[in-house]
Amino acid sequence: MLEHPSGHERPVTVDSWLSWGSRMLLDLEDAPDREARGLMASLLGSAGAVVINGPGPLSPDLADRYAEWVQRRRNREPFHLITGEVPFFGTVFSVCPGVLIPRPETEILVEQVFSRTQSCPPQNILELGGGSGALICSLLLLFPEARGVAVDIEPAPIRCMLENREKLSLSSRLSLLAGHWDDSLLPGLSFDLLVSNPPYIASGEIDGLMDEVRNYEPHRALDGGADGLDCYRQILGPKISSRVASGGLLVMEIGAGQRWAFEQSGPFGLLEGFAPAEIVSDWSGHGRVVIWKRKG
Image (tube, rainbow, N blue to C red; front, side, top):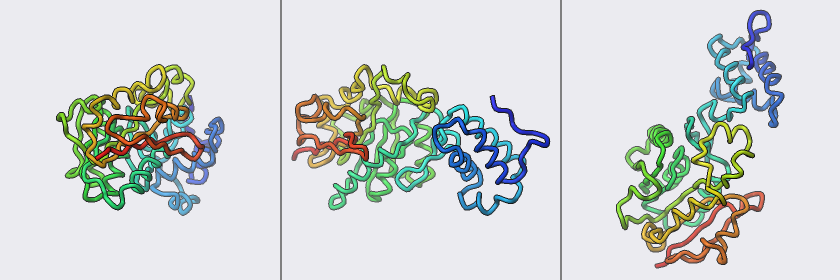
């Protein structure tokens, strides 16, 4: 365990604390200087504050917190879980233990929705598996006339979504429900847009994930069953067509290597009541977002 520096070894200025932090984080695969500076920027409020206050002293309470943050990061706790915040699609969201940290790849889903609905924006949006709320809140910020519903089965995501909803002044437009996928919704209630980023990692691959993910993020939000497709089987059942209004969109994120399952020859490529699935690749060429358009 990393001991907090004390006595004559204890840094004084912001710059000296940065140097100490970089040394302590040398074992990280990522750039230790960037990690140390990022933690300090979160502590002081901005990257500019780190530069401006560099030669000056860091107050004892902030110094103790910085030392604690460095120790946590050295133990491979995710950076954004330490700071409690993560940027997503131009907005900073709160995150907490028990909630999956939003990934940049999920921004592709938001981009695809926006590019396809600008001429006819959705009026009501449903997210299944809301997590932090970053996805549904980003969509509501893009579509100011829309209202949304987000569902999650775990209490930690519900609490996190409540916090983000309040912080972004979306309380009057976003309803939160506890439940398993759409089981808590009235039968036949349909939406112009249904989005979901369900667990899609195969159970046997969980132990091989990075320490930051395996040890600190909720396995229920990661584990998609033996082949990673269990949650798609649950969501994309016979009643899915009744959840999407005529002409509406069903949009989901998928894992790398799962494209085959969403092609026309796969189990989810052709859904009753929908046009054939369209698959959008991420920056690495992996299928990442799948889009179905409701017929009618």
